[in-house]
Length: 126
Image 1 (cartoon, helix red, strand yellow):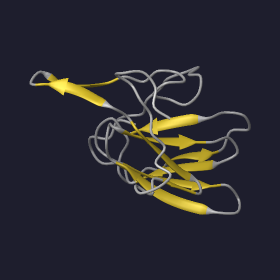
Image 2: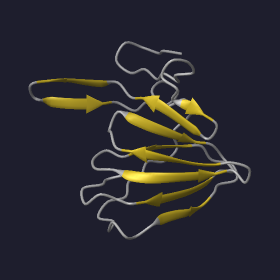
Image 3: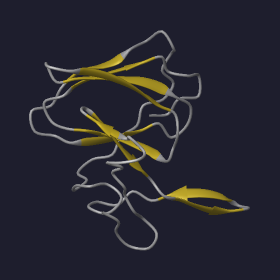
Image 4: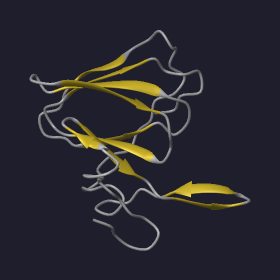
């Protein structure tokens, strides 16, 4: 499912075992040189749906948990741009945990999935 030359998303259905039940991870292409790196997020290209809003969380203490909600009709991609945090996803039938710890790894969260964020590192920006 790759799209244009500089932004692509890959749902690894085989080999990488990146898609299992609730956990759907997408690879975000990192471009860079000796000046640094860049990741572009584009609707229907790097992110597999329309983007309506972008927000980020930072300065969260390690012992504080966030989230604790689901959305009726909203898809999201969660990316921990720096640092790390542990995501818990629950659809009422299955519960899965995944660590977000790379700016090139996005977690697709479907609608009707309960989400919790735990164990924020000191530098986490999610």
